[in-house]
Length: 226
Image (tube, rainbow, N blue to C red):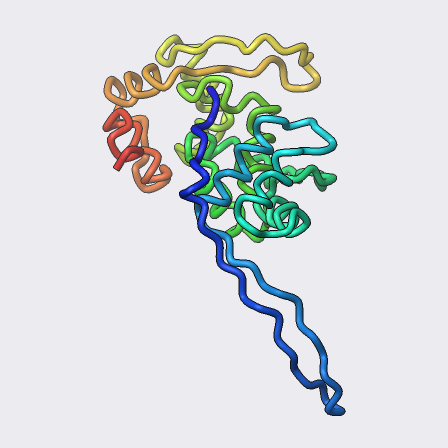
């Protein structure tokens, strides 16, 4: 779905003039002009980069530069700060991937904060792209068996036991993982998780669950939209 186009008149910009300062020996040093980016300009930069994700050059940036009076190099620098410009992504560690699997239902920004709290620095754009590539968000109403176990604070074998007993409905994702790799991955619908919790409440230890996630699950998304 194309992003809304921001009108030129709504793209005010502020630039702070370059100033002269003195260093330790009294020599005058000219500082670079600083540019202040409004939310509207940031939004327009996102539109340009999202509209042409694989382009080597984006003429829209030069056009935007003329509109707002900010050099195109400064707009490109801002795009890098927003995580939009293509940069070589450092490999994702197993702990990071575990956080993605556990909190995939959250917004990309909230996942960024979860990663930051765990000591990892990732951009919102990088998180969104990784989730998409890993298919964590191919359907936000599905959980993996491991992800569900982490949210409930239990061992993944317990979830597998619930599934094999028929108490918790699930389906296989259809991967090519062999038995030595742990077998195929379970996909569990959110509504089936909710139904299981309501039908088997004594199986859940409320002291171990991710409380915000559990509240969101039971209220059918109310906590997520609040």
